[in-house]
Length: 248
Image 1 (cartoon, one colour):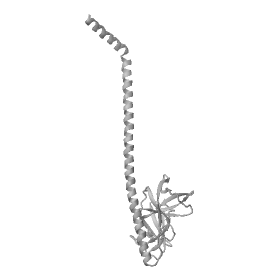
Image 2 (image 1 turned 60 degrees about the vertical axis):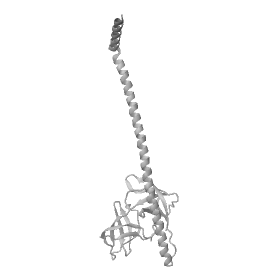
Image 3 (image 1 turned 45 degrees about the vertical axis):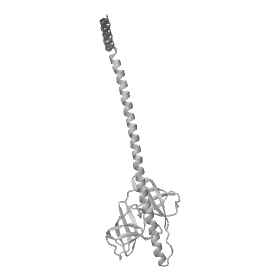
Image 4 (image 1 turned 90 degrees about the vertical axis):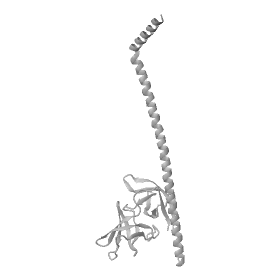
């Protein structure tokens, strides 16, 4: 009798398998696919969270390193001003007190132009032109664009300011042509040389005197003046922070 029941059970299972096997397999396949999809989605979200976390850690590390550099630059500027004032006092001249302020770059003005950058500067006066510093060297100027502060980095054709070339302080004006930066309007009778250092003159009241700009790479004789091609100390890469010269 037990054998008969067992035989009937086997037959019943066989009939059910033949009749409903495809449906049962389909159901389990559907459950399996859903489970796998949920697992893949969970894994994706989990990995994204991990990547986001480590990205934030890396960003914090970069900001800390940038902050160290900025502090060092600030200390150097303070030391420079202090030393300069000592020299001025010895010569009976008035105190020199340049005022610089830390500002943040926000975004490119145009995505296809890496020489124009919006600056976050609350005390901006749209009637003024400001000098811009990066790591203690000239990075360009800040002007008004619809009453908003816009940085023109070295290389922009409108990033112009007065400079001296070499130890003899040959006068000229910085004018950019994108990847090339020139000092133009040098008198024909003056003789700049390759390797001369270019510094700001301070005559235009944009920069204070003596800020390093670059090194002469080539001297060009033109019809009524001379020009020099320079290698700027400040490169086109846009840092997160600059110093803006508020008062000379």
